[in-house]
Amino acid sequence: MTAPQAAVPDPTSAAPAPAVPTSAAPAPASGHQLAQVNVGRTVAPLDSPELAGFMDQLAEINALAERSPGFVWRLVDDTGADATGLHPDPDDGLLQINCSVWQSVEALREYVYRSDHLRVLARRREWFQRPDGAHQAMWWVPAGHRPSVAEAMARIALIRDHGPGPEAFTFREPHPAPDAR
Image (cartoon, rainbow, N blue to C red; front, side, top):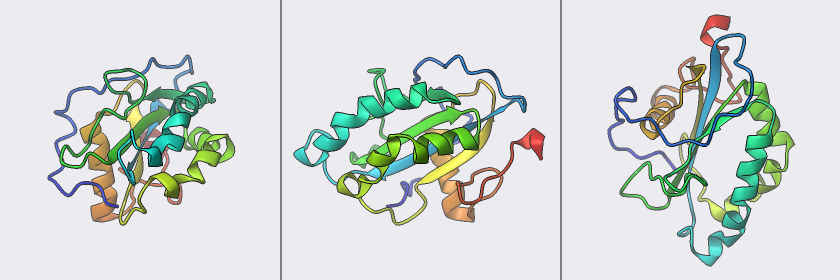
């Protein structure tokens, strides 16, 4: 799966994304926080029997993220529960987005790979089509900044078009915060 091939909107012109409240996590010493985005194309509509196992766990996994050390913010739609109502490609109703902000790469890594999130991640092929291109990105944002859907999709496009670098990277090739370089 690749991110939509449409022109990438200017991330500075997009409206701020809805969000859940920021946690009480202290601001990082560097003045930057880590934004992350991942997209996935589901194997069927969210209300289908094929996605029931995923949807049944979504609120629990989102709550786990919010309780995790280093969590700052996550993107939500107008319902305020999750981002399933947001569509990064209006022509692709199966493309889902997840975007959040964390204090550090290490905090995000702990949540993704060393919490109960891993049991859901291990089953992703049941619910999501295999990606055929860049589908995730991380980047540093000034503390307090909340990425829009357009900004997040532009970061995936950077990796797709140029590979990982300081402006958009992955767990395999992380980059330090700008003021830590």
